[in-house]
Length: 525
Length: 43
Image (tube, rainbow over all chains, first blue to last red; front, side):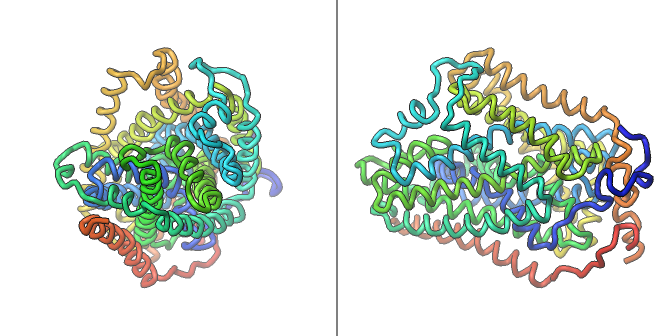
């Protein structure tokens, strides 16, 4: 590590003195929508809405969007844009003791990325399988026995499945290629291609689903309101949970993306577009998925409740069954799995960027070096652990625990710290109000400092009690202990350790052109 | 589809996509500020 100051280093060494930026506000908005619209929009929202009041779910859903989702999005934007840094750098500039919060978010993104890439790879394979309906007449058996070759044993093994390994390798090569190209030429350009493509493909998919016999039955099931559900706390928590997970808030992505914005950006105006576009896509996904499920129920002579499901079961078991029976099923399959691939890629890129940006800032590396230093070990770990006969259970446990005790926990701790320990909400709203069309005031501070901690705290405690008492699924205690609980605690320990490492003299924290952003700007306005 | 399901479908679309349209209109009324391509401290 060189001890020379940034200003003294040779021009050819070390990072560019200026931070990368989006070329325009529009590009940022498209990249942020690309990040927010992910697998959860397509395979999680429809079932959550169906299970929690059907058509009546729109009430808690909109309340959650406006009272927690968008306010937390503004909070992330404010931190990233005011302190111009990746999550650890932005938090460090906010308060020296807050750096570990940023590394906690980075560690969470690390875990999510190594399994999220696997699902994108599966979706890629299934896009090809759709053409020939490779699964025959047994999609469930094909998925677990032939495609994943899932072992009976729940453990960690290195019995690789080439049919998953190869697509996963391609996913990582592509992801790292995009990220090595940088914010403007990589992330922005890929979002500008993938997001419109995703929208067009998904719109065609929705139209095709609506034309299937029985589509109305599915929509009836999804939209018939159960008003009594509104009196149930769990329905409201489900709405807040869906909004929270779907918007990609509070785990570093939006801090990182906002740090690449130019100074005079309308943060709240942009945030409203991102928030409503993400929800708009979810409503579209609800229509498409339930129209298709209505067809499946009608074709098999059962009720929609018999076929409705979410997540991996919906995508890789229910949808293949629909594709096999539907007219022009191959087209439906290519559109559905292709949409998962595009939605997944833009989200995966944003998740890995959180880690790359953090290492780039702390070590003072250039873009390509940071991408390789972060990306190659990540890809290797992902390729070693998941495309194996035992990878599915590991993915399942990692996903469940990193969501509950990673994302929800860090979000809860972050809002409490920012509101009550560092007490920075007034400074953050002042910063946002300097450049934004929609001004943040008392209402925003109440939402962030009271509503968000209550809801997040409730979610965290409920999950803690449920997983502590009931365990997780049918998995052995040691497996859940190591890869669930152990991993969740390890994320925090790793975060503290990383925050103790001194910042490189070449790092962004030592770069005077990036220090105290906007500190004197108000006076010059 | 039942009448109430159609009504809730329309309400969902109008509120969420309507919100998106309003957000886009708001952004259009506040065009992006021109910024000189200069490092931060020189502003």
